Amino acid sequence: MTSYSAPVGAPTWFDLTSSDPARAVDFYGAIFGWEVEGPPRAEFGGYQNFTRNGRRIAGLMPHMAEAGPANVWSVYLHTDDPETTVQAVEKAGGTMMVPPMAVGEEGTMLIAVDTAGAAIGFWQPNRHVGFSEWGTHGTPYWFECQSKDYAASLDFYPQVIGARIEEVGTGGDPDAVGPDHYGQVFVGEQSYSGIMDAAKMFPPEVGSFWQVYVCVDDVAATVKQAESLGAEVLMGGEETPYGTLAALKDPLGAVFCLGHPPAGM
Image 1 (cartoon, helix red, strand yellow):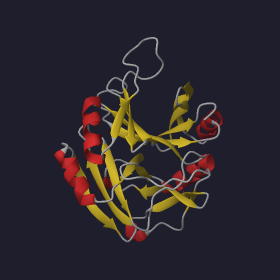
Image 2 (cartoon, helix red, strand yellow):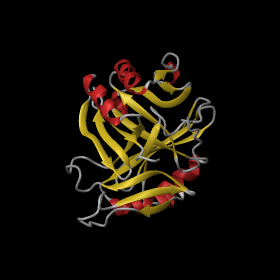
Image 3 (cartoon, one colour):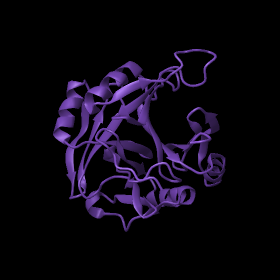
């Protein structure tokens, strides 16, 4: 088990808005060993926390028509000052979707839209500290912004979270392995997420979005198991310099990814 405490600006939480929470519980429980913490919390719209190894790992929210699309994963970055984050978002050219809102005594959340059009959440923890384990089966592996405007994303996130971007793309070299344009997002000396130039990866109607990679012990076995439970395979296990990666849609249509470290890591 690898303990994790998100520094300011790094991913601290992710949650699923689902059209069928009970089915989502069964599916993610089967492939990741996730359980749910207690009954749905009526005061928070039926929100539940997934747990792994007795620790909170991700969230689950029933879909409400007025709250946007169903069956999507959302990512939250750690903020220690929501109002300052709002100011930074707006100064950098982003907009607010959900202004700072206290969630009981758990913490304070806000959701912004970055300058490439991707929704990104922020969480100031109080009693709810976010996930606290990384890099083991069923816990986060990586977070990634699929940006339809790569230059805008590279400009936005350093302004808002004080990150440093290290570009590791191939630059279009036909003999190199990997994406043409990719930026690792460093918070301090460590990177926990990246920005992919996705302008040519998806049709025009698909906007920018953040996605989640969950670590698994065996990508091929997890893909096979997920498919048997009704998931759609978007990308089977693919060996890359960054590990074995796969992309799936859960049985309700939510996209998520899998990752396993490269040999020797």
